[in-house]
Image 1 (tube, rainbow, N blue to C red):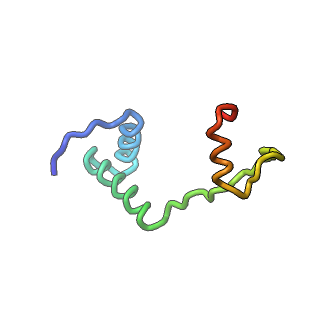
Image 2: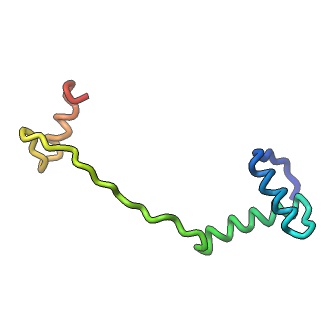
Length: 83
C-alpha cells in the first residue's frame, strides 16, 4: 500500500539510524521494520511497563467531618467554603 506520511524530526533520525545499522536498508524498509518491532514488542510482552507505585502522604483530618458517609462528604465539598 502506498501512502503519504509526515514524520517528526526525531522519528526521521531514528529511521536513518536504522538504515545505517540495517546493512543498506532503504527508507521504506527501515520504517516498516521499526513499525513491526513496535507492534510486536507490545503484543509479545517484551516491553514491560514500570510497576505503578502509590506514594502516600498525610492530608490531615477534620474532626467535624464524618468520613464514613460519602454523601455527607460530597455535601461538604459542594459548599462554597471548600471550593
